[in-house]
Amino acid sequence: MAIQEPLFSSRTRSRFFIQGIRDCFGKNLTPMFKNTFQSGFLSILYSLGSKPLQIWDKEVVDGHVKRLQDEDIQSNVLEIIGSNVQQAYITCPADPNATLGIKLPFLVMIVKNVKKYFTFEIQVLDDKNVRRRFRASNYQAVTRVKPYICTMPLKLDEGWNQIQLNLSDLTRRAYGTNYVETLRVQVHANCRLRRIYFSDRLYSEEELPPEFKLYLPMQKS
Image 1 (tube, helix red, strand yellow):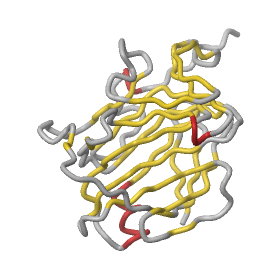
Image 2: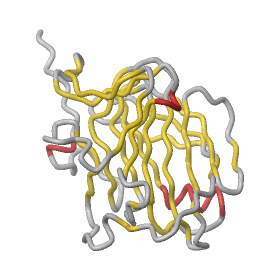
Image 3: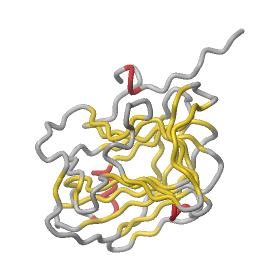
């Protein structure tokens, strides 16, 4: 299964080949956004925010998670770097006993290809009350669908990319079940992040609010 979505201002494209899912059991999990009216856009990370990792936790061994200025967009971004992708990551919610409870079906990540190993995971709940994980990695060659984890190769173009995932479609195609909500988002090394958000549908760049766009500096003639 191949997924190809239009990029942000960079006009590049991200391609996905869908796979995988794994069960993650938990009791008395508290949905963070249970009482939040969910429509339009719901952002969970913005690199220009005063506290971009306010609702995130991080784990770093032999690496770093820090905010710095990206030379291409000349603006602050969040960089996740580590010698081992499994030992350098950010995860949301920060509380391991909480869940996001986000029902919006589209996930969008504005991410920069730093030409190193990179992976991320999205944990969802389906209408069979099964928790499954979708994992995308740029170092995996084939798609694998197992009962509780779907793993998929990820190809990013050079520079800044927009990753768009239709979680409802992925859940249906991989497992034949219906997407209910997203429980957790975990982003591993190595990458730079501008924003991560959910939406009720895919929006064209013209429809996006200004703060959701990735502006590239004007080229001097």
